[in-house]
Length: 135
Image 1 (tube, rainbow, N blue to C red):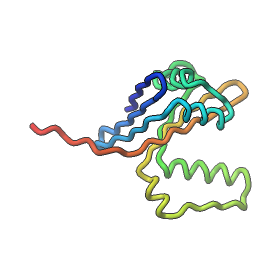
Image 2: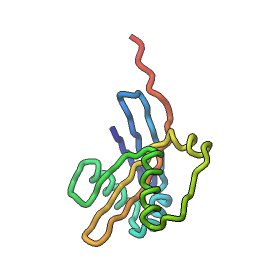
Image 3: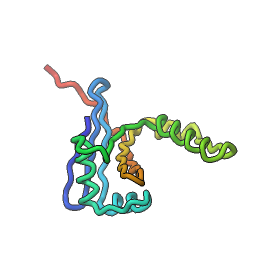
């Protein structure tokens, strides 16, 4: 379950996993989001990015898609991409770095047009386990 709230210059994303009682969260400043869209090759203003994210959450249209990935999921995708690009470049991550990242979740907003497919990654940190209410 994904929750989004935005102000004039910040975007907050909360991800709840009810079955496990876990929550991931992050607050992104407008400049950060504008920078990642520019680095991804599809520069967007903050307001436009927020509208795109909300449209993807509400499943409006087919051009926007939202995925939630774990660190392990991302590593599998990177390995597949690297294998397709060149068979000789085997970058490995340290065990400590993998463990530190293993508790994160990543919201990937994908914008697909006729000629482009752009991914905007948003990392979320595990903030706490939900505590059951006392009866």
